[in-house]
Image (cartoon, rainbow, N blue to C red; front, side, top):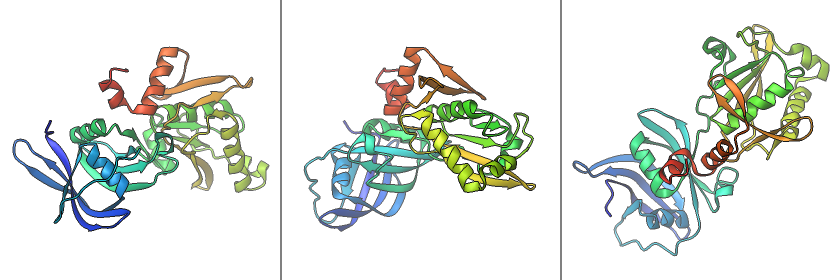
Length: 297
Protein backbone atom coordinates (compact mmCIF):
# COMPACT_ATOMS: atom_id res chain seq x y z
CA UNK A 1 0.00 0.00 0.00
CA UNK A 2 1.38 3.38 -1.01
CA UNK A 3 0.53 6.04 1.55
CA UNK A 4 -0.25 9.64 0.69
CA UNK A 5 2.67 10.84 2.80
CA UNK A 6 6.14 9.63 3.63
CA UNK A 7 9.24 10.76 5.48
CA UNK A 8 12.32 11.17 3.32
CA UNK A 9 15.96 10.93 4.42
CA UNK A 10 18.58 12.39 2.11
CA UNK A 11 21.69 10.77 3.57
CA UNK A 12 24.78 12.95 3.79
CA UNK A 13 26.98 10.82 6.03
CA UNK A 14 26.79 7.12 6.75
CA UNK A 15 28.79 5.62 9.60
CA UNK A 16 28.83 2.19 11.17
CA UNK A 17 26.65 3.20 14.11
CA UNK A 18 24.86 6.35 12.94
CA UNK A 19 23.34 8.15 9.97
CA UNK A 20 23.36 11.89 9.26
CA UNK A 21 20.69 13.13 6.88
CA UNK A 22 18.40 15.93 5.80
CA UNK A 23 14.89 15.08 6.94
CA UNK A 24 11.89 15.77 4.70
CA UNK A 25 8.18 15.11 4.66
CA UNK A 26 6.50 14.46 1.31
CA UNK A 27 2.80 14.60 0.51
CA UNK A 28 1.90 12.91 -2.77
CA UNK A 29 -1.66 14.12 -3.36
CA UNK A 30 -2.84 15.85 -5.43
CA UNK A 31 0.77 16.26 -6.56
CA UNK A 32 4.09 15.56 -4.81
CA UNK A 33 5.08 18.31 -2.38
CA UNK A 34 8.18 18.10 -0.21
CA UNK A 35 8.80 19.98 3.06
CA UNK A 36 12.12 20.21 4.89
CA UNK A 37 11.73 19.12 8.50
CA UNK A 38 15.32 19.19 9.74
CA UNK A 39 18.77 19.91 8.35
CA UNK A 40 21.57 17.60 9.49
CA UNK A 41 19.43 15.25 11.56
CA UNK A 42 21.25 12.30 13.07
CA UNK A 43 20.10 8.94 14.41
CA UNK A 44 21.70 5.69 15.54
CA UNK A 45 21.45 3.28 12.63
CA UNK A 46 19.13 0.81 14.36
CA UNK A 47 16.53 3.55 14.93
CA UNK A 48 17.00 4.87 11.41
CA UNK A 49 16.49 1.33 10.10
CA UNK A 50 13.45 0.90 12.35
CA UNK A 51 11.76 3.82 10.58
CA UNK A 52 12.48 2.15 7.24
CA UNK A 53 11.13 -1.22 8.39
CA UNK A 54 8.03 0.56 9.72
CA UNK A 55 7.28 1.80 6.22
CA UNK A 56 7.31 5.50 7.04
CA UNK A 57 10.84 6.42 5.87
CA UNK A 58 12.28 6.34 2.37
CA UNK A 59 15.99 6.81 1.79
CA UNK A 60 17.66 8.82 -0.95
CA UNK A 61 21.41 8.27 -1.25
CA UNK A 62 24.07 7.87 -3.93
CA UNK A 63 24.42 4.14 -3.32
CA UNK A 64 21.51 1.80 -2.46
CA UNK A 65 20.92 1.68 1.29
CA UNK A 66 20.33 -1.70 2.87
CA UNK A 67 18.77 -1.52 6.36
CA UNK A 68 20.04 -3.94 8.96
CA UNK A 69 18.09 -6.46 10.99
CA UNK A 70 15.12 -4.89 12.74
CA UNK A 71 15.69 -4.27 16.46
CA UNK A 72 13.14 -3.43 19.19
CA UNK A 73 12.32 0.25 19.41
CA UNK A 74 9.67 2.58 20.77
CA UNK A 75 8.91 6.01 19.38
CA UNK A 76 7.41 8.91 21.27
CA UNK A 77 6.12 12.23 20.00
CA UNK A 78 6.92 14.91 22.55
CA UNK A 79 4.32 17.55 21.63
CA UNK A 80 5.32 21.13 22.37
CA UNK A 81 2.61 23.09 20.57
CA UNK A 82 -0.79 22.23 19.10
CA UNK A 83 -2.83 23.91 16.39
CA UNK A 84 -3.11 23.59 12.64
CA UNK A 85 0.51 22.47 12.86
CA UNK A 86 2.02 20.34 15.60
CA UNK A 87 5.48 21.22 16.93
CA UNK A 88 7.13 18.16 18.45
CA UNK A 89 10.27 16.16 19.16
CA UNK A 90 10.53 12.59 17.86
CA UNK A 91 12.08 10.47 20.63
CA UNK A 92 13.50 6.94 20.52
CA UNK A 93 14.13 4.27 23.17
CA UNK A 94 14.56 0.48 23.14
CA UNK A 95 11.41 -0.18 25.21
CA UNK A 96 8.24 1.80 25.84
CA UNK A 97 8.71 2.05 29.59
CA UNK A 98 12.10 3.70 29.01
CA UNK A 99 10.79 6.18 26.47
CA UNK A 100 10.55 9.30 28.62
CA UNK A 101 12.94 8.31 31.39
CA UNK A 102 15.82 7.12 29.22
CA UNK A 103 15.48 8.50 25.70
CA UNK A 104 18.32 7.18 23.53
CA UNK A 105 17.97 9.63 20.66
CA UNK A 106 15.71 12.38 19.39
CA UNK A 107 15.06 14.67 16.44
CA UNK A 108 13.88 17.97 17.87
CA UNK A 109 11.81 20.90 16.65
CA UNK A 110 9.82 19.11 13.96
CA UNK A 111 6.59 20.59 12.63
CA UNK A 112 3.81 18.86 10.68
CA UNK A 113 0.18 19.59 9.81
CA UNK A 114 -2.01 18.08 12.52
CA UNK A 115 -3.66 15.48 10.25
CA UNK A 116 -0.30 14.33 8.84
CA UNK A 117 1.16 14.18 12.34
CA UNK A 118 -1.68 11.89 13.47
CA UNK A 119 -1.09 9.69 10.42
CA UNK A 120 2.54 9.11 11.39
CA UNK A 121 1.65 8.53 15.04
CA UNK A 122 -0.74 5.79 13.95
CA UNK A 123 1.60 4.16 11.44
CA UNK A 124 4.52 4.15 13.88
CA UNK A 125 2.47 3.09 16.89
CA UNK A 126 4.04 6.08 18.60
CA UNK A 127 3.11 7.40 22.02
CA UNK A 128 2.36 11.10 22.34
CA UNK A 129 2.77 13.30 25.36
CA UNK A 130 2.27 17.01 25.85
CA UNK A 131 5.50 18.08 27.46
CA UNK A 132 5.53 21.78 28.33
CA UNK A 133 2.26 22.34 26.46
CA UNK A 134 0.40 25.03 28.35
CA UNK A 135 3.27 25.76 30.72
CA UNK A 136 2.89 29.14 32.43
CA UNK A 137 5.92 30.32 34.38
CA UNK A 138 4.57 33.77 35.21
CA UNK A 139 2.09 33.81 38.13
CA UNK A 140 0.83 37.24 37.05
CA UNK A 141 -0.23 35.79 33.70
CA UNK A 142 -1.89 32.91 35.55
CA UNK A 143 -3.91 35.25 37.76
CA UNK A 144 -5.14 37.11 34.69
CA UNK A 145 -6.27 33.86 33.09
CA UNK A 146 -7.81 32.51 36.30
CA UNK A 147 -8.31 28.89 37.25
CA UNK A 148 -9.08 26.61 34.32
CA UNK A 149 -8.30 23.10 33.10
CA UNK A 150 -4.55 23.83 33.25
CA UNK A 151 -4.27 26.35 36.11
CA UNK A 152 -4.97 25.80 39.82
CA UNK A 153 -4.40 28.10 42.81
CA UNK A 154 -3.81 27.15 46.45
CA UNK A 155 -3.42 29.61 49.30
CA UNK A 156 -0.53 27.73 50.92
CA UNK A 157 1.21 24.39 51.32
CA UNK A 158 0.74 23.42 54.97
CA UNK A 159 -3.06 23.68 55.02
CA UNK A 160 -3.72 22.62 51.42
CA UNK A 161 -1.76 19.37 51.23
CA UNK A 162 -4.65 17.11 50.23
CA UNK A 163 -5.81 19.50 47.52
CA UNK A 164 -2.27 19.89 46.22
CA UNK A 165 -1.88 16.13 45.74
CA UNK A 166 -5.27 15.88 44.04
CA UNK A 167 -4.30 18.65 41.61
CA UNK A 168 -0.92 17.11 40.81
CA UNK A 169 -2.43 13.66 40.25
CA UNK A 170 -5.19 15.17 38.10
CA UNK A 171 -2.75 17.09 35.89
CA UNK A 172 -0.50 14.03 35.55
CA UNK A 173 -3.49 11.89 34.48
CA UNK A 174 -4.99 14.45 32.11
CA UNK A 175 -2.87 17.07 30.40
CA UNK A 176 -0.13 19.34 31.67
CA UNK A 177 -1.02 21.76 34.42
CA UNK A 178 0.27 24.66 36.49
CA UNK A 179 -0.25 24.74 40.25
CA UNK A 180 0.53 27.92 42.19
CA UNK A 181 0.84 28.09 45.97
CA UNK A 182 0.39 31.50 47.57
CA UNK A 183 -2.56 32.59 45.42
CA UNK A 184 -6.20 32.45 46.52
CA UNK A 185 -8.98 30.86 44.48
CA UNK A 186 -9.98 34.35 43.38
CA UNK A 187 -6.49 35.04 42.00
CA UNK A 188 -5.23 37.30 44.79
CA UNK A 189 -1.53 36.92 45.58
CA UNK A 190 -1.09 36.32 49.31
CA UNK A 191 2.35 34.67 49.24
CA UNK A 192 3.86 31.84 51.27
CA UNK A 193 6.72 33.77 52.89
CA UNK A 194 5.43 32.92 56.38
CA UNK A 195 5.74 29.20 55.56
CA UNK A 196 9.29 29.62 54.27
CA UNK A 197 10.15 31.28 57.60
CA UNK A 198 8.85 28.22 59.46
CA UNK A 199 11.18 25.95 57.47
CA UNK A 200 14.17 28.24 57.87
CA UNK A 201 15.07 28.77 54.21
CA UNK A 202 13.59 28.33 50.70
CA UNK A 203 15.56 25.17 49.90
CA UNK A 204 14.18 23.31 52.92
CA UNK A 205 10.68 24.49 52.02
CA UNK A 206 10.92 23.20 48.43
CA UNK A 207 12.42 19.96 49.73
CA UNK A 208 9.42 19.51 52.05
CA UNK A 209 7.00 19.98 49.13
CA UNK A 210 9.03 17.57 46.99
CA UNK A 211 9.10 14.93 49.72
CA UNK A 212 5.37 15.23 50.35
CA UNK A 213 4.58 14.72 46.65
CA UNK A 214 6.80 11.64 46.61
CA UNK A 215 5.19 10.23 49.76
CA UNK A 216 1.60 10.78 48.65
CA UNK A 217 1.68 9.59 45.02
CA UNK A 218 2.29 6.24 43.36
CA UNK A 219 3.98 5.19 41.16
CA UNK A 220 6.74 7.79 41.21
CA UNK A 221 5.51 10.77 39.18
CA UNK A 222 7.59 10.88 36.01
CA UNK A 223 8.56 13.42 34.82
CA UNK A 224 8.63 14.82 38.33
CA UNK A 225 6.88 18.20 38.75
CA UNK A 226 9.11 21.22 38.30
CA UNK A 227 9.00 23.38 41.43
CA UNK A 228 10.29 26.95 41.58
CA UNK A 229 9.80 30.15 43.58
CA UNK A 230 8.56 33.38 42.00
CA UNK A 231 8.37 36.92 43.40
CA UNK A 232 5.32 39.14 42.84
CA UNK A 233 5.31 42.58 44.45
CA UNK A 234 7.61 41.34 47.20
CA UNK A 235 5.55 38.21 47.88
CA UNK A 236 6.82 34.69 47.18
CA UNK A 237 4.72 32.24 45.18
CA UNK A 238 5.45 28.58 44.48
CA UNK A 239 5.11 27.53 40.83
CA UNK A 240 4.64 23.80 40.18
CA UNK A 241 4.48 22.61 36.58
CA UNK A 242 3.10 19.08 36.18
CA UNK A 243 3.60 17.18 32.93
CA UNK A 244 1.19 14.51 31.75
CA UNK A 245 2.58 11.14 32.79
CA UNK A 246 2.81 8.01 30.65
CA UNK A 247 1.68 6.06 33.75
CA UNK A 248 -1.60 6.11 35.63
CA UNK A 249 -0.77 8.15 38.74
CA UNK A 250 -2.62 7.59 42.01
CA UNK A 251 -2.82 9.64 45.17
CA UNK A 252 -2.51 8.03 48.59
CA UNK A 253 -4.95 9.00 51.34
CA UNK A 254 -4.24 9.03 55.08
CA UNK A 255 -4.73 5.24 55.17
CA UNK A 256 -2.37 4.77 52.18
CA UNK A 257 -5.35 3.76 50.02
CA UNK A 258 -4.99 4.64 46.33
CA UNK A 259 -7.32 7.00 44.49
CA UNK A 260 -7.36 8.34 40.92
CA UNK A 261 -8.01 11.96 39.96
CA UNK A 262 -8.56 13.61 36.58
CA UNK A 263 -8.95 17.23 35.52
CA UNK A 264 -12.40 18.37 34.36
CA UNK A 265 -12.64 22.04 33.42
CA UNK A 266 -11.25 23.84 36.49
CA UNK A 267 -11.84 20.98 38.94
CA UNK A 268 -9.85 17.95 40.05
CA UNK A 269 -12.34 15.07 40.20
CA UNK A 270 -11.80 11.74 41.95
CA UNK A 271 -12.61 8.83 39.60
CA UNK A 272 -14.16 5.67 41.03
CA UNK A 273 -15.59 4.03 37.90
CA UNK A 274 -13.25 1.10 37.00
CA UNK A 275 -14.08 1.47 33.28
CA UNK A 276 -13.10 5.14 33.30
CA UNK A 277 -9.90 4.34 35.19
CA UNK A 278 -9.14 1.71 32.54
CA UNK A 279 -9.62 4.30 29.79
CA UNK A 280 -7.18 6.65 31.49
CA UNK A 281 -4.62 3.85 31.75
CA UNK A 282 -4.97 2.93 28.07
CA UNK A 283 -4.60 6.56 26.99
CA UNK A 284 -1.46 6.95 29.09
CA UNK A 285 0.11 3.84 27.58
CA UNK A 286 -0.98 4.05 23.95
CA UNK A 287 -2.08 7.63 23.37
CA UNK A 288 -5.63 8.81 22.69
CA UNK A 289 -5.55 8.63 18.89
CA UNK A 290 -4.14 5.10 18.69
CA UNK A 291 -6.54 3.92 21.40
CA UNK A 292 -9.51 5.23 19.41
CA UNK A 293 -8.31 3.69 16.15
CA UNK A 294 -7.84 0.33 17.83
CA UNK A 295 -11.36 0.55 19.25
CA UNK A 296 -10.17 0.50 22.85
CA UNK A 297 -12.00 3.71 23.78
